[in-house]
Length: 71
Image 1 (cartoon, rainbow, N blue to C red):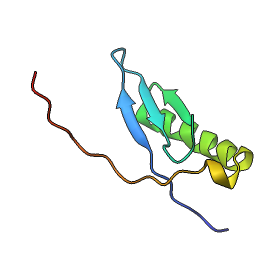
Image 2 (image 1 turned 45 degrees about the vertical axis):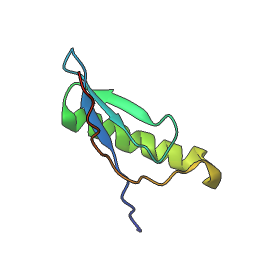
Image 3 (image 1 turned 180 degrees about the vertical axis):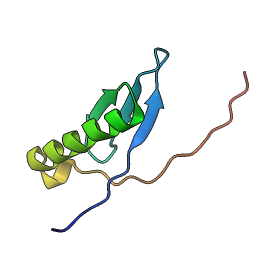
């Protein structure tokens, strides 16, 4: 079986919940109370997004950068 890698972004909210987003698919976001749980959920969501999405809806993930802002 062929396998493909997808980037994910992991954040943690103020309540400690992990929010995981796959920027390749519009609206592909899940959460979990542990990182492992969140990754399991986003893996399932990516599978569903792959089945439901048209090729035109894919975006190419470029990366993450910091910007400096005076506060």
